[in-house]
Image (cartoon, rainbow, N blue to C red):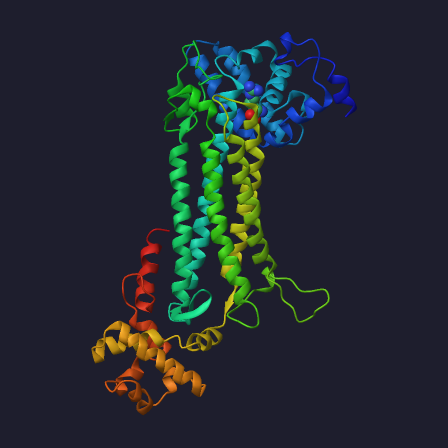
Amino acid sequence: MAEQSSETKTSNAMWGGRFASGPAAVMEEINASIDFDKKLYAQDIRGSIAHATMLAEKGIISQADRQAIVEGLTTIRDEIEAGRFEFSRRLEDIHMNVESRLAALIGPAAGRLHTARSRNDQVALDFRLWVKEELQRTETALTGLIAAFLDRAEEHAETVMPGFTHLQTAQPVTFGHHCMAYVEMFGRDRQRVRHAMEHLDESPIGAAALAGTGFSIDRHMTAKALGFREPTRNSIDTVSDRDFALEFLSIASITAVHLSRLAEEIVIWSTPQFGFVRLSDAFSTGSSIMPQKKNPDAAELVRAKTGRINGSLIALLTVMKGLPLAYSKDMQEDKEQVFDAAESLELALAAMTGMVRDLSVSVERMKAAAGSGYSTATDLADWLVREAGLPFRDAHHVTGRAVAMAEAKGCDLASLSLEELQTLHPGITAGIFDVLSVEASVASRTSYGGTAPSEVRRQIAWWRARN
Ligand code: ARG
């Protein structure tokens, strides 16, 4: 702090030419982004090396200056990675911290690096590179989660459980099929990640402040050196655009929503009242007062992280809303939202993958629950349509009466006698008992995408070939 207050008296070394005095302390505080954008140091240095190399190739700076710049930047990267670099808030952001140190290391040649460039295209580049890498990490993490689900689905392709709508018992399904529903969800998230990587794959460097530059730069050269498909086409849009950050945050939000639905199911399933799954000790905690408890804290926290991640999306959408073109300093608020959401999402994906791999499934509890709640009523109605020729609506009515009869007797549908069922419709024969068990119900649902074990295995094979 002492260092800062004395330094505020002098104007900024990077842009202070027309300034007589330095910023107020609070100005420095609101303006500085170094506390968070130092995370972009590696991207900043990579970008600068590519830019300097292109400037030298085009004869805009000398090869000797390029060499000094590249060596200086490499030293700076080592200093940062060794924890030996002193970041200064007075120098605002990562770009000026690096450039200022470069000047100290190599002298006046450092001043040539910023030729034909502005911090506006520089930050757009650094941040894009970072988001691109984060999208790659997200893709890998999603692939890991999908793989965990494929293994569990294979193991439980025949395990029956109640399927729910309105969280009321609906029809029996297999646990493998339920797992594969999540594979579909996380598979779509991964597709969104891949699309975002394609959208983002354009290099902003060379847009300069907003209008491009009069120097004879080669934007295709820098794009290629930095691993982008091509340069962006419109320099005004380039420095105004944060769609790549918004896209990352919307993908992160949708993924987080999927994770929170899964987390909620794990919380419900692991209650003793359901008892469908047991979390491993590695992913649960005990209570300090109630010795019997095993709490699904990891699932709860995954569910809660969704709040932060969705909040980040809304925060950045709100920052960007109504901003005139081109760059405005408002846009500096983009990074913390993305960094925080990325950290939360990585953590949530890793925790969920661990939970899915580790949880033990109670096949008996699932099977017992699958048979309760008249879950095979639809099978009875379908049988009446198929074997007794009833229109579905009439079959539905007859089945409703069968359910009422079973309810009055306090038994399940399969426990009603043939005579009792025949009082509801004379066309009923003993063949009806073949469809009233949960296994028969599940095995019969062989329609494309249905819950029959044979169909679930086909879905697993389809995904294994793509994961
Ligand atoms: N720290 C700034 C940001 O994160 C870098 C760009 C600043 N550009 C400027 N013209 N002040 O957005």
